[in-house]
Amino acid sequence: MRVNGELKDLAATVTDTDTVEPVAIDSEDGLNILRHSAAHVLAQAVQRINPEAKLGIGPPITDGFYYDFDPEQPFTPDDLKAIEKEMQRIVKQGQRFVRRVVTEEEAREELANEPYKLELIGLKGGSDQGDSGESVEVGGAELTIYDNVDPKTGDLCWKDLCRGPHLPSTRMIGNGWALLRSAGAYWRGSEKNPMLQRVYGTAWPTKDELRAYQARLEEAAKRDHRKLGVELDLFSFPDEIGSGLAVFHPKGGIIRHEIENYMREQLLRNGYEFVNSPHITKGSLFETSQHLNWYKDGMFPAMHLDEVTDGEGNVTKQGQDYYLKPMNCPFHNLIFRSRARSYRELPLRMAEFGTVYRYEKSGTLSGLTRVRGLTQDDAHIYVTDEQVKDEIKRQLNLVFETLRGYGLDDFYLELSTRDPEKSVGTDEQWRDAEETLREVGEESGLELVADPGGAAFYGPKISVQARDAIGRTWQLSTVQLDFNQPALFELEYAAADGTRKQPVMIHRALLGSVERFFAILLEHYAGAFPVWLSPVQVIGIPVAAEYGDYLDGVIAQLRARGVRAEVDHGDDRMPKKIRTHTKAKVPFQLIAGEEDRAAGAVSFRFRDGTQLNGVPVAEAVDRIVRSIESHEQVSSAWAE
Image (tube, rainbow, N blue to C red):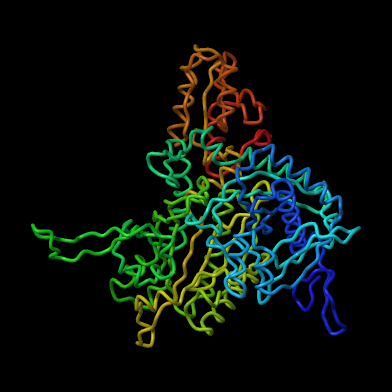
């Protein structure tokens, strides 16, 4: 339940003056409590089997939970099976979760054999975030321990340092849970700390919901962009280059080109101007922008250059630090500042496909969705105060139109507001900016979800969350207000009344990064891209070698219209060619035999195995070109 807005165990004492609200188990709060309780049962099961395993943290996460352990040996699949069986016994036993407030001294005495818990006790009242942002479950102004108590005897079964709340009983965890996998994880997310064993699990109110989630996981595994990237020969991560640095192969390069080209067309139609900036710069630029204050840990180390020494090794000219850029915005500010600006030029919209470099920790890297070298479809828009609201509306409409062009059309919005401890600017600036974004979000008619404290240090943002074909949510486009950098870079424009004024800066990333968006689209379409994005759009398959020349003529007509098309003149038999190109997810297979050649026609074969026979060549060419121009997803329904 919530008591006066605060989550509490059902056993908490309330008074007549308290405001009490029920928390359903299938609500967001309820699911977190269910999953957090399951994480405690996991930890208890591990220590029943391996009493020497030391405890880390065990928070709920999206769709599940995890718990970190320090065992003598890494967990094996057989270990996870044994842990699951022990968890089932604990759940069935119906142990009660009992909250107990303790002093720091009492907590240290009770948990003397748990070194990681002892470290967390020192965080009481301070930061309760790990180095990678995960909750460490300490609590706020007081420390609490949760005892797992035998319901029949009242004996203590197990205990853990935790803020709670929890379910009243382990029995309420039910049978809608399962362990998923184990992996290595650095303690509190820092590579400087020991590597622990993290066990992941999931928990749902019912068995049916668990099975539905497992089915989604199976489908997600089939769509995993890392797997499809290899199968379809799209990209790779060579060891010789380094972790988190991808190379795109020819077929992946075509898809990437089409993604970027469509974006460029949209930008030009919406009044953008393209700029370009170098990949490296003096550190002083990021001192001015304050990225070295706020973002240094996410930047690659400095390169000390330009130092000059004499023949005896004495420094005659001091060097300076250069950095690979993690952001494009400081460069765009310099472009704005390069000459005098007038209000007549505003809004001034600068766009760049700028590759940036971020030193992501190796444990956080994940295919193309989390990399160290990424190309942002970055834009920075400079406006007057009066133009802010209309420009944000304009940018959101551009976002919706563009994402729909890529085949994504299920959205909601998220408003990220100020973290007072990690921000610059006045209260008034933040209040006005947040209210403007809130009004625009509400006027869009889409669901607007709050993200308290999630803003960047320089201003609030509104982001577009898109759901893919299997219902997963991805943060894609962001529109952020910035009243900090224009002041830091002393940006000005001549106002209509002759005074000098400071512009408002809007950061806009539509795709986020090209690499991550590539991965999202690859998984959304399960590799079966619409025709306009497909690396090979049409493959000609002759029934026999004698019909190859006829198909060459058909394919030549398509290529003359800009279609990526070719004929398979290989030695394989026709059925094997069909299987090969179906597996490669080519949208159109054009098959020709004697009847087709005699009639000046071709037969279509689609990805789902259906066919459309005897289509005149001119009509076939026109149909294919139209499907590309309209960004159409092609299936057997296309033939109707």
